[in-house]
Length: 314
Figure 1 (cartoon, rainbow, N blue to C red):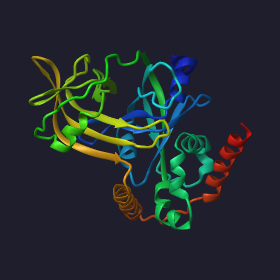
Figure 2: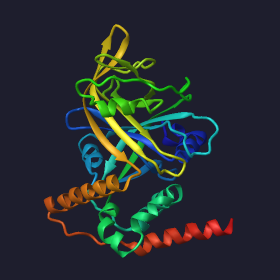
Figure 3: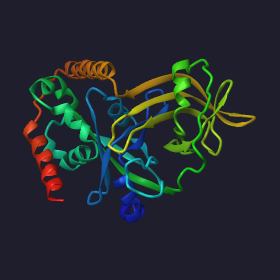
Figure 4: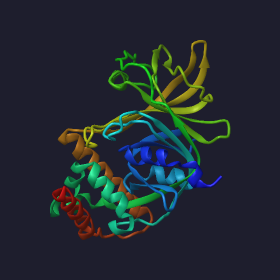
């Protein structure tokens, strides 16, 4: 089947409207783990393109080891779409070793980030910020070629607060925070061993999180909780990793650890995250014997100028 048959125009519209999607890759231990990402659908090439900083290289490492991935477009916040249709894309990913610091090489992606997340300009505002945050713009680019595309209806059911108890593998702080999310995204493996994703409404249990309404395959799995506002600010994400098992009440995720993600706002948390990003990025370069590449700031300025000109013309 040709890719243009896989991604129908209506499906492409949803993929291009959602500000984020969930990307599932498979870790070295064989656990599918999802994180929210921003990307662009390139209809001419029939690929979905995204990137990650060398300070957050794990997605790239996973893709190079296991190219099978999944994308789920399931959070319509800020999309402008009336309905919350979902789209699951399973595909094959590629990630080059090249560290890209030229914005002209992926101008469509950088323009989308600048348009949908105005606050991102703060990461390149002024010489001092650029000296500290240039690491963020040293990127590894990932492309996903779809092999299967499935349209799904929006998740039904009213939002409700959950009271999740702390348990082994799920500390109290994260258990309490789960109650702030109306749903989460389950990453698991299908019968063919391909990563797949489902948006689910978990229910608390003594020894885990029940996941009604899904027919996922038991095994290693994870549950992503993330949110953002309509301008991609106020982001929060973390992942509960564990074993998906069958129980008398249905499928149950038994946690064994939590991977913390983005937490904003807050100056101290932002500084801590930036320092961690910088430390990991410099380690990435040092391990490979690479010089610190220069960022083409003038190209980012040109993208911002085009956006500003278009906004003034409206």
